[in-house]
Image (cartoon, rainbow, N blue to C red; front, side, top):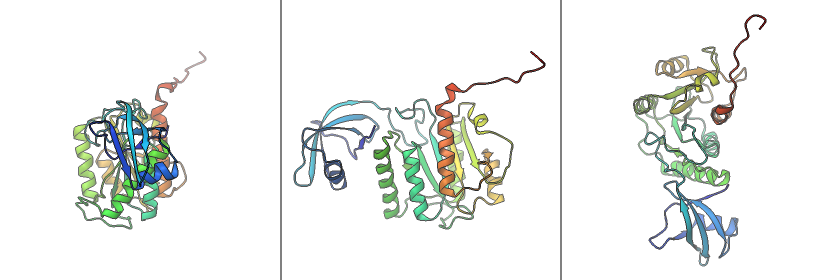
Length: 282
């Protein structure tokens, strides 16, 4: 179900006030008129129904009719056991995405938000075209970061995802591994998966996901893939290697392909059938 994402909560009287892009989307695109009701998500993750009171002068005012908890949306790394209606019992899925060209990163952000990923962590690897200093950016360029956040909001509203997908400012490779170590310290059951174009181990995605991970992080390389040294570093950090079949995928395709595979397997985990091999003629 599509839900509008509110940038702020209602006032003490249960009223909201929307203008600018929000007004344009609700009034010009969705053509909501006074008296109509639409579902919305609060910044903290709660659901609310909003009745339009007026839409004059470039300002929409609304009345919150009801609200219910949709699971507090915590920032990645804190309170990750909180669930949302979309995620059910799924662990949060984090995308470690090596920076591709800018237009490809925009597409990756959109697809990750539509797919209900918890967090997107861009980083600079050896073959990345955009280069980031080793410590990373404490705050990305305002225009780029604002664009990514706008893409996330539009994608969530289009898809109806209630997962508050976060996009971090890009990191250097050392900062990425430091962040991964922090995640593992807070969540010992974290699972890291390295998607690589060369077979590094004869293993299956089902096998990796069988042990109920607390968090799943998947690492995707840039257009040129990961260098052998980088792949080895991911393995030393505890990532499990996986090859996406025999095809070499574009980085934006690999991100979507990998995230979708993980999410579908986790969603259908309760329906897995474990078949034991037969011995003899019995």
